[in-house]
Image 1 (cartoon, chains in turn red, orange):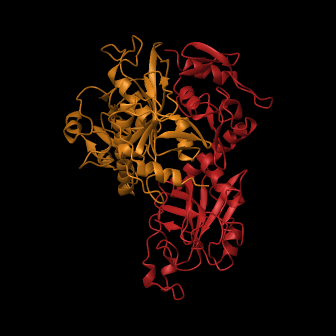
Image 2 (cartoon, one colour):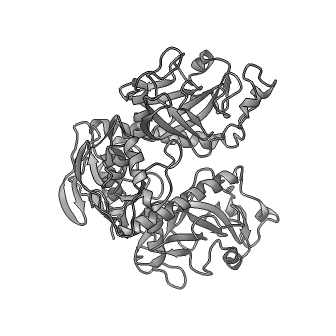
Image 3 (tube, rainbow over the protein chains, first blue to last red):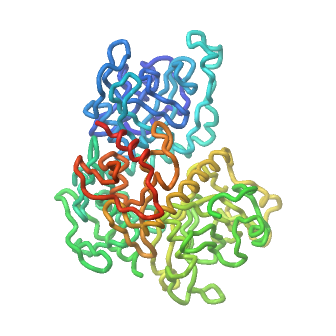
Length: 300
Length: 300
């Protein structure tokens, strides 16, 4: 389950990993990353297990998984072959939201003073590798809170020993929560859209249906799902696989801006010239009504 | 001035166009679009002048300028050569925010019941042409409110004749305004970032510095400003022209994900192979510290 979990809310507190597991916020009881390379990361736990982590409230620099010994020292390099790290790369490439559960620890003023707190959905804005504090290669993921989600109030943790939390303080809700409906709506839109697009991108293995280019990056490959007939007014296209193409970003920009249109026999027309057939896939029907509406939309 | 105007706020009301002009929200006294093809659109007025307009609160389908006679009937085709329409295309291509001023009219339940109201910043999410209600070609721009900005409360306008507004109703503030600081911060970020990127894109005339491709679309051309060393933690790159490249979206994705790095003598390295020199421009210095940091970030 990617995105918000029913019957939970941003700021909700859990006294243990098991309760967060039962609520469906973060399913594993030990692993910090829940997810797979195929589907992306559902959720992560930020609880101070990696000394290279940084926490700015609405931005978390999250260290990937692996390379630690049993006492938490980094003793070998991390790798994108690790399932959790690969899942975060997929979340970045696919633009999928990741639930963030913060656990009590002294390394962050945004951590709860005890237990765990669900702090909303973050995007994986970027990633990269570097030498960590202990001198081994680590992968880091820049997690950014979606606009409109409240940021937890900062607490000066050196004044609050975790062993003895200030009574009542752990009940403090995050600031705001002013517009939960809005956040919810945003997220549902992202997730619904992604399911349809990801099906199309899987059929085409991230290869552009117009120019056949596939962008290869460390940890995966990248393409975009592009609606032929735009969603929403004034276009009102359906959010179905037959209205979505798998495109490279360049062809996506040109399709959206009418620099590329398709004929009824699915020939690509660029700047008024036929440049070749759209590559198709046996399971991927294209809705000709959408093709016509898109072409008509650019009838200069 | 693109973006928020100092000393104004979302939901602020103006009894006349002149007062909105004096506040700097919308400078022209008659034209519905303020802006130029070169710089993009500063602001638009949504006041029912075009019967093809649609208003959904956080989305406005805005009809371009031109082709009307003196009584507001569409009597000829609209064109992207019109300065106002071309300005909105630039805002779309550059990702620039546009101020929206709503004026009282019966065509929208989100319009104020009298006078004008500043309703915040919108992005131009898409555009295209179609046959309007009167049978002539019109250009339409899908304007989307930035996340986090409050949407005005809908008013059933057929129950409220504009000639006789319900007393006090016009003083009603838009719902929310819960987090103006947040909105302000978002917008300032967008605008600051754009100035640096646009300078670089202007130097290179939207031609990709890596693959030399320029995306041509109706009304303009398109490229992206790409930071070499990422902004923010953990990268902490500067937001300066010497840390920005003018790239096509494909090369941008590959640079951000480390599939492309640069050598110290500015040779492009893709998948470990030198593929040719980065195209440069006499005024566009490249900061080699940024080039090195980016390359080190992908030291797998």
